[in-house]
Amino acid sequence: MTKLLDIKGLTKKFGPITAVDDVSFSVDRGEVLGFLGPNGAGKSTTMKIVTGFLAPTHGAVEVCGHDVAREPLAVKRRIGYLPEGAPLYGDMTPMALLEFVCKLRRLSPEDTRRGIEYVVDKLHISNVLYQPIETLSKGYKRRVGLAQAIVHDPDVLILDEPTDGLDPNQKHEVRELLTEMAGKKAVIISTHILEEVEAVCSRAIIIAKGKIVADQDPLSLQARSKLHNAVGIRLLADQVDACKAVLKGLSQVRGVQVSAQVRDTVELLAISTEGQDILEPVRNAIDTEGVRVNEIFVERGRLEDVFRDLTFEVEGLKARSYAETESDNA
Image 1 (cartoon, helix red, strand yellow):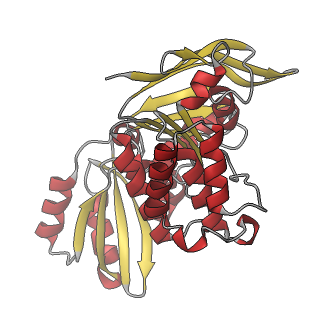
Image 2: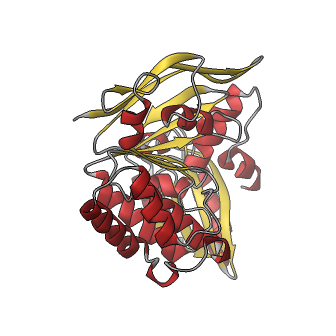
């Protein structure tokens, strides 16, 4: 695979505050990287350095082989950037903005036409093309912001909360577009929406207090959750006590909790002792005791738990995971 982004020993200080602390990672063509962290972790600062909006205190960044500090114009030609909040010129129309961006990027008339046609079609903004941006809804403003980031077909996409303000259908469309583009680009998505990481990203980095605390694919991160390989059981409320009694008798089960209840249907979670596969012993025990259940399924794990545990640990706080919080309800 081709390395399109290479970050080495990146550090950024604002006076006595270290916002980014010796961060190193690379992103290859075809990768979609979820860049995660709590507020103030250093995500936006890192992206502003990569895009040339901030200078690093130490370290180096290369985009498609070009150093950000020494070759800023070459880097900007190859990057598409959607900042947080998508700041736009409110008195412009989307069409005027896109034409302006293409002119700044010195695209040919043919590439300008092709690029604008592509983003208008993919982001469904044809009905607001000649409407002042300041009059648009938050969702449309976000789509116009994404359109200006991809109109020149960049090799590297840096997107800060790309689906912020979009409704569920629009989020789905944008995620499909990112998946479609990912094969020939390197994409970095900063987001607080963990389901977005599962849906789109091939890799995730978690940063806290300016340091990387995890760098894995989403499935591997989920496997670090205390709920990895937990068995979920949906059943009627009158079967709950009998089911709990069966599960508590299994050595492979560390705890049992109620995870949801809708009217007379309850969902229990049997937590695995060591994260091992416990589906078969749980199912066999339930069948043997004649407990009636509607559905049995296996939990892959929850990114929210992993995110909280890793970031709280760095910040010196004690994170109570979902599994720990609910274990007393068994």
